[in-house]
Image (cartoon, rainbow, N blue to C red; front, side, top):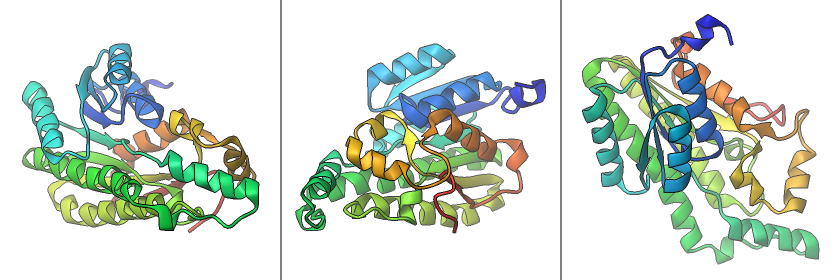
Length: 263
């Protein structure tokens, strides 16, 4: 890593939600390696968050992003301790293993996929964490950054918002909402010097992907010129969007899907 790259976040304070594993953990490690004075790692899993925070000399926070007060308290704690917040990466999110199991069952039986008619609590869980959680984090981050006149926020959407998977309507809808929400907020807050952008991954080799049944995963691997991305690949994308090198990038949805499709 060149000296210039290593210093992209020199002296800055960062908050990473979903930082206990997968993409969020890779981002936390990258931000620390590139000069952040402090990386705050937030996750609903205390053990995972603690392990990542300890590895980067950061601070750990146990937070459910679906709880608006918990998110407000998280950001207040960070700014109270640091008196600044320069970068927020919102990587927290969930999938639906039950829906994936139904997709696999249909694939194995040759019957049509039947998820929609069985969706109930799964819909609300996915939407409350993926979409409502993004709103909570964006709102709290902007409130903290606006008085200082700047900052960078990166949300994590999904290529599934465009190339929707049969039997996964709630996940696709939640991530499409993340894209639209982030772009609308980006237009609103750039006047305060705050940049908001989104990365839209295709399949990524994370613990979430590990819950995808093997046959479903194999089918996903057959599309695109590149197989599953690594969490570090996505950290590269995200840290670019959060860096000064992307100062003219506002409201972008960066596809990172290995060439599966273009928009």
